[in-house]
Length: 130
Image 1 (cartoon, rainbow, N blue to C red):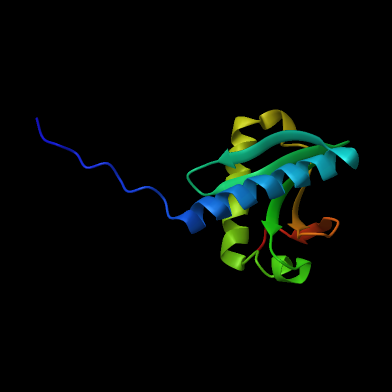
Image 2 (tube, helix red, strand yellow):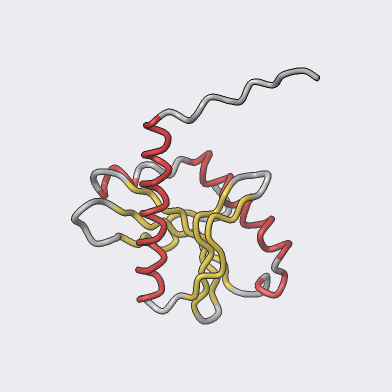
């Protein structure tokens, strides 16, 4: 039987970035719940990309990209047009698996997280036409 070499462990920087992302998403979800949103999904993965948070409030479903940076302004510029398109495509996939939400208003938000700052929620940060 052929030996298979296990893949090397991830670099410490990658592990730290992953943990920072999880922490930011947890803070973002708590912030959204405090604002009256119900979290429908976290880290929803599709072949097109991942949606950090899917949240509902009344007749609205928001697909939310969470960005954590040292400064809130840096986080705001971290959602690139290419990433926006991947989120839009992933949202379409989410709606295919959750058709009961397809008739609701849809919105694409960003939630920015930085140390020692309150989260900044950018409502309608981008739209599906990007």
